[in-house]
Length: 76
Image 1 (cartoon, rainbow, N blue to C red):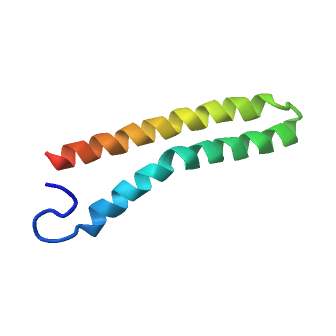
Image 2 (cartoon, one colour; image 1 turned 180 degrees about the vertical axis):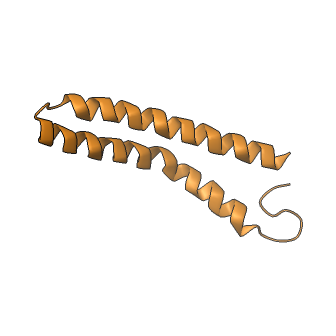
């Protein structure tokens, strides 16, 4: 079954799929933000920014794969 599900449009599934596209960029943005703040506070420019960028990418990819796996399991 798709988003339509046979009985009409399933807004819950559609909203979950729409939010998947925001997982990776938002995780990266949070990592960059905290890395920037820590660099300014500790004076370690640009190391914390780079470290938290990597953490944001890893976190975003893990969340993305988890959401896609959940969607694929719900589809079956």
